Figure: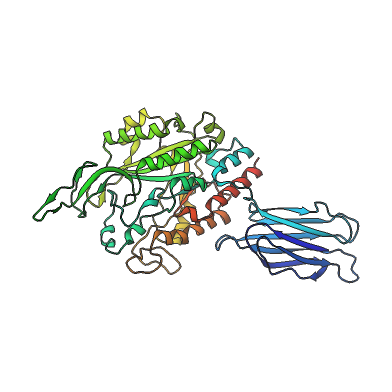
Length: 489
């Protein structure tokens, strides 16, 4: 009997083990089957035996360093006229599917090909929600595993970016090292439209109502000037006054990235092109927005996206299905969370709930959802990977009346954690990692592996990570969603 493994997974397969229950190998299985190639081996009876060959061989899918996937190929070819069976098992079960050629092998000396591929074989990241809804239109949004990005709008931060009102004290001394502080502020490298096209459906945005036009002095008060006003000068020869802030709204993470219209235009362009995709926007922090500033900002947001934003529920329950949201042409769920006041440079005050701070604006704009009431979004606040895993696991919520966010992020710190942990602020020491890119590319695969290998049967909803587009987050989300929907259909 000749067996072929046709590897269409897109990744190499490495031999792990074999188990022969009856029979023997007439030609040994290959130690490696490269992607797009076919591996062949032969099995047969032991001399004089009246029992046909039966056994299995297991290969590991070389997918990522952290996600461990095994494919086990089974055969049972009875010596008698009984039908033979050939199967492939994937562990975890959602990763791979297979077919046989021929579909029903007959005869004594059989030749069979296992054709294996990943369950994301026809996966389209731009329309994965539509694909899921085709399988089960009444799936609840709270039951979906949704990929998200942390500090989603920071992709345009660079060496020349201005400081914003949310900057923290450590930024100034770190800024003397060329590009160091910007490297710790930039959490994503792809625009919002690129993230949407890559399958990301939850966005964490922060807005600063001002950028520093002159060098700030931490702990001192600052002075606002208009968007086009000249910078005031003093002295002879004249020099710029310190702590001058130009009043203009930017997405921020200590540094200015892009203006709001850039992000919201991206969202509008995407949802117009993909009418079955649902996007979550969490405006998690806004800095120094007066009541009037907030009214202007919300009106601009409404002018761009208003007809696509879903109104918040009138009761405190959350039972929305994909079908419910799309029924009236809605595609966006908008949260606004914390409002911060900044009076002195380098020190933003603790946040207050938007729905309480600007209660009249909240009440008159039904498309604004209260993050306090409808979003469970705990901050792990750790610089250690081991602690991050424990905190994320403890933060998994079974409250079905709130959307739930797991933040798969490390907070850089100047402390020196245990050797097996990764994250501390190393731009000063020159040790690895030196940027959020290096940190994200180290931590994010571990987060995805925890979800995939250990937490897939828990009530996970939204998971956010840094540098999401260099990860396989969306593919894993799709495969787990597809598996659970198929199992519970």
